[in-house]
Image (cartoon, rainbow, N blue to C red; front, side, top):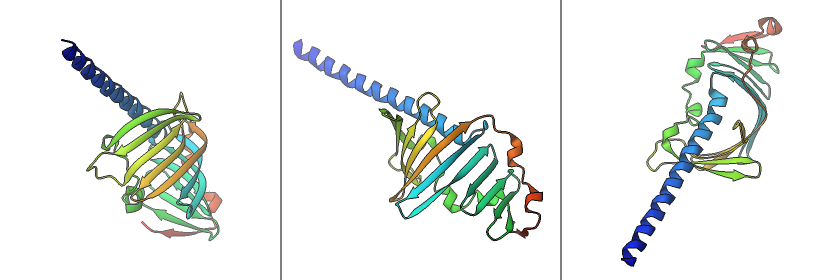
Length: 204
């Protein structure tokens, strides 16, 4: 009788641990998806960022997105994308390139960071600077991003730092001045008069 009771207690303890793990995974997935939707959702977002890949490649800039529209600036490049036409301004060369956004979005480099929510196992933990959400690609999942470690703010789940393992290398993205919502659509309008003396190159 005692042995049977002990076995039952062990089984219940094991089931309880599984339930806790599942609850943790569900919370982690919900929190991370909220953060991801801040960046790519319809409400609009703007932020400054710094990218570091293995210490060999570094970049910093500004980005503002809202649905299919975006504007970004880094190095000597400013990009205005209204969803139908993309203007790439290169002030140092005084040229403006015209691109088809739909063609660019199929680029292999961009596909490296394509996110598939159901292809990962999730976990979440407290961190001195917020919440730490970890995503590990499920065995056999055909995704380029093998692991994602996201540091998020508590409450609104704004991203503060992302560490992404693509193939065998790590990419670190640090965010600052993050704002979600209240993005005026006029910010995405290409200011043609500002670059009226630039040479236009049509690459569509």
